[in-house]
Length: 476
Ligand SMILES: [Zn+2]
Image (cartoon, protein in one colour):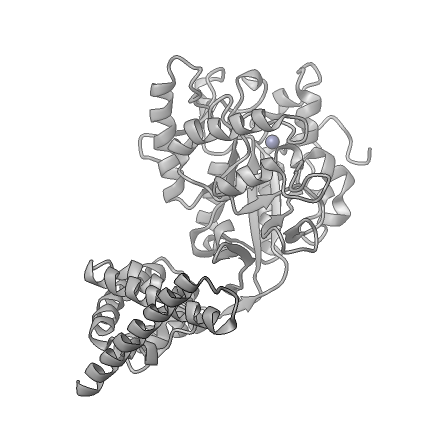
């Protein structure tokens, strides 16, 4: 204790001397000698330590610990300067750490729990509980044969399925050409899922493939069962647009009496009105029930939403007079989907061409998303460009106003459209903008016919193709 007291006294003296020096320099007006910058750094450090102590005094232990971690070269010597306060912090933070690690491991994410514990171990080197948890999570990973995966992450996307293909692809349907080009039929989607499973792909949560370290988003190492390859599946334009109603898609996603996800299509016979087998959400849910190891840690798909005509078949947009009722219904479905492991992405509000609209129109777009969609689905870090059209910099190489706005709105991972697997920074090859970009392979009638070779490792396009319902022959 005497030793600690002495150290505290010494620290106080150092602080006092530095303060006097700082005042002297301030009054003399001398600013550019290097001892001063060293002194400033030391003062800054002392200020940061004091901030940690203040947070401890306020019993904000998690915040205090995070603040401690921000201090450069923090080590036990530093902590021992004020050992009583820091002992209190480490004791209290330990409870938080254990709770957090247990929450991850009980959700099956042993790798995340282990990463968290390992990153804090330096403060708890001889701690029995922390070491036991590290051993537990390491053993869980070993017993599940999870191995580090550093290869490419496949990201596929399609649109809402053609739930009633004979109607959707009927040449008399004014939308049949668009539907044929942009969508899959339920039978094609089911065959694709089975083929992906047989080729050892496993669904992963898009949030698990990257991390934000001090404001910079980076690709993260995944821990997967040995031999498995990660797959993200996203689904665009899931609003069941009013203009597409009664043209071959379902009307909306609903919850049945047992809180199960189903689809509803009003202009169908009673037998077909509610279905569990004609849209990607219930089909994928059923598939994972049959093949649970197709989903890693409960991951499902990424639902990419706009807002101009509501979401998931509910007219939640402010311009709709009955939006309050629609929002309530949509909220129930969204909550259930989240519980089931589905994630949401922003696909803009009005499905604009990013380069064609003005900065002011773009700002309005972002604002409408934040006011109308975000309150229902919560905040999402994922931005999926409409038409895969993106703009990051202006012609002179600076970050564009639109991109800055997206970054300031909290978007971290940006997704485009392309037939090759691509996970990088944009502008390509630089880390300057810290913008992480991921391309997605489109799967639809057109790509099945034209890009089968790019997808050969995923599925056999000809075998998948719905030769019964599609009117365009495969070899066209
Ligand atoms: Zn779209």
